[in-house]
Amino acid sequence: MTFNLKNSLAPRRVVHAHCDIPCGIYDPHEAQLAAQTVETMVTKIKALPDDGSEASRNSFARMVTVKEQHAERVKHEVQVLWSDYFKPEHLEKFPELHDLVWKTLKAASATKQTVDAEKAAELRSKVDEVARIFWETKK
Image (cartoon, rainbow, N blue to C red; front, side, top):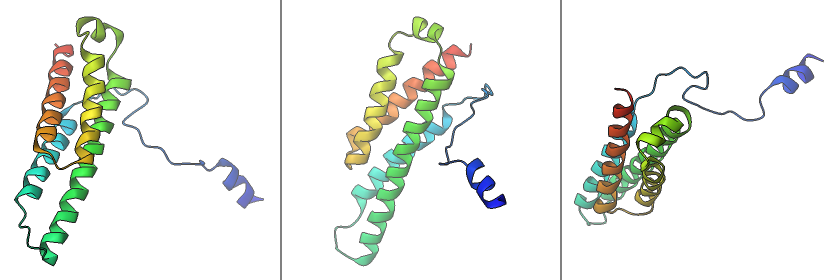
């Protein structure tokens, strides 16, 4: 009986969120740091020696993994700002915000698909613009 009750009350899947209370504590710095990490990993990957050594292959794999994780982190952090923080009055004041968020999320995806310094720089620039707007809304 206890086992069945425990199973019926247990969540079917685990979900993660910043805060759905809402807590009111939002900050774009994590997205900016993640975008900077993506850009740094691309630079480091491009600087790896193309010698086919185990050390180079290992470094490549690790750097790509970090790049992918941080690009995904950018997407998560920007989506939290978009869905939980930004409000209609922010869109009225910054009508480019909707398109900017969409393009930022697309840029994060693009950095996962390639090792392209231009795409990484574009992501960082877009995240910085989201952050700029965020801080403007706090004034």
